[in-house]
Length: 274
Ligand code: MLT
Image (cartoon, rainbow, N blue to C red; front, top):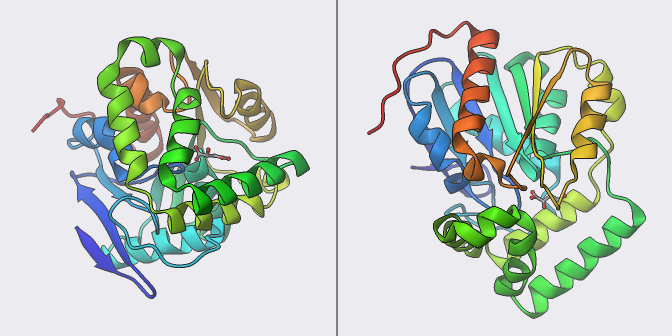
C-alpha cells in the first residue's frame, strides 16, 4: 500500500487484526525485513510496517533523515491509518533509534517498546567518521558497494554459510534502498542524540532482543540498554547476527507474541498462515 504524506509517498503494510504493532526496519533495509513477523502475527495484532523514506518502495527525498523526522513519518502514517491509540513499537537497529525518538516525542502513543539489535548511545567520533566514509561510498560508488561491504557483517556465520535464501533475500532488500536514501539515513544517524538518560525515566514496558553474534551492534550494547531501563527484559538469541528476526524467526516471534500479550492483554489465537 502507499500513503501520500507531507513531502513524500510512503509504502507500508497494514495487516492482521488486534492491538496495533508498529514495526520499524533498520538501515538500509525495508518493510520486507519483517516478512516472518507479518506472516506469524496476523492473528494477534494489527501490524503496520512502513518503508522509511528513501528505503524500499518509499520515495527518496533529500536528507538528512533525522531519527525524529523518521519518527514523525511513522506518527503521520499511524494517523492516516486511523490508529490513535497506544501501539507497541518495535524497531530494529536504526529502527530502534527511530522507535526511541517516537517514544520520546509521542509517549502517549506508546504501549510498550521492543528494541532489537540497537543501542542507546550516540555515534562516537570514530563512528561519525565512518558515516562520512559510507556517505562518500554511497555517492561515488553507489548502493551496491555499501551493500556488499555490510552484508557479511549483518548475518551470523552459520546464516552466511548455510542459508543462501536468507542471504539473497537480505541483499535484494538492501539493494532497493536508493543512494539518496542511504545518504539521508547516514546523515541522520550521525547526529542522533544519546538516549540513555531519557530511557532511565521512560517508564513503559520494554523488551530488548539481540542476536548473540551481532557484529554491527555488539551484545554489550543490549546489556547497557537493560541496565538503564528499569524492569526491561533482555533476550539474547543464539545463532543470530544483526538481522535476528530473519535469522531466528521462531524465537523472535515467540518473544514478541509474549510481550504483546503481557502489554496489551491480547488473547493468543491459533496461528494462521495465509
Ligand atoms: C542499522 O542496521 O540500522 C544500522 O547499521 C545501524 C547503525 O549503523 O548504527
